Length: 113
Length: 111
Image (cartoon, rainbow over all chains, first blue to last red):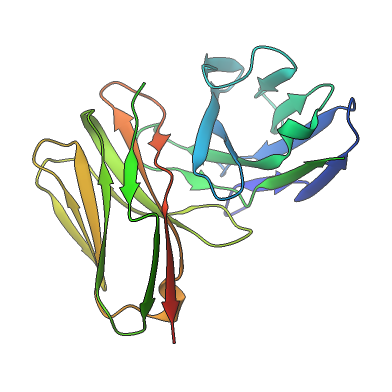
C-alpha cells in the first residue's frame, strides 16, 4: 500500500440513504484528514483525526456527518440521510507528522439522485 | 478564518511560454504548500515552504514564499502540456494542524 486508498471511487445514493466512504492511509501514517471538493472549487476542510481521536471537526456539518478512525481498519466518513447538496468529491489525506504535507487519495465521487 | 486567494483563476497559454501564479492571504502561515490536481484525481504535493523569503526549485518550477509568510508564487518556465492542471496552494497557520486551501488556478497549456 504505497499511497492513500479510498473506496469506492464512485458512489450513487438516493436521497435519504446513508453513504459510507472509506480511507486507508499510507502505512505508518497516523494523521487522517477529510476534505470536500465541489466542481470548479478548491478543497474545504472537514475533519482531522488521529487514531481513535477526532482532533478537529470544525469543518464538518453538525448534523448527518460523522467520522471515525479506529485503532484497526480504515477511517470512515459517514453521511446519513443524504441530500442532493452532499454531491461532491470527498478526498482523504494522510500524513506522518501533521505538519509537512499530505498524501491524498484519488477521492470518492458521491452523487445523490 | 484564514482565507487564501489565488490568481489568476484561469490561465491558458501556449507550450514554451513562461507563467507565474500567485497565492495571497492576510494571514501569516507557518508553512505553505503547493499541489497540482489533475481531473478525476487527488492533489499531488509539489513543495512545502516554511521560511519567509525561501525559494525552492523543482526542475522548471520555482516556488517563492514571501518574506512575511503571507503570500507565495509559483513560476513555470517553458510550460509543457503535461503541466496542465489545477494548482492549489494551502497554508497552515502557526500551531495549526490542518491546512486551508485556496480555490486554485486552472492552467491549460496548449501544444
